[in-house]
Length: 105
Image (cartoon, rainbow, N blue to C red):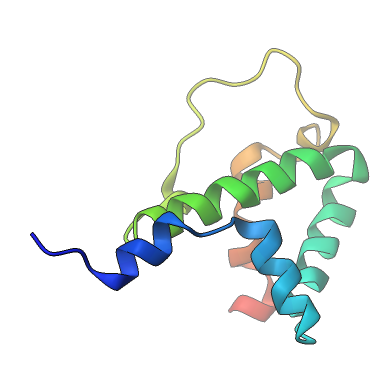
């Protein structure tokens, strides 16, 4: 089987954060506004958890060449210590809030 150039690019992808920084260097900022909105909604104490989630979703999407379904995940094992941002909303509600936003309707 012959290597495809796209597969070579995917294996060398630097990750969400460097890619995001490259887009921001070109003047794109809509993604950052949405991230800041979600962090404000969840609370800054949950920002590390959100960044980790976004990193994992981006990696899964890239490695599956867009064929994965990260939004269809089920959180079967819940953490022993519940992050403060989960006290008012369950994890699926927080993580899927981008689909219920008026901007995405």
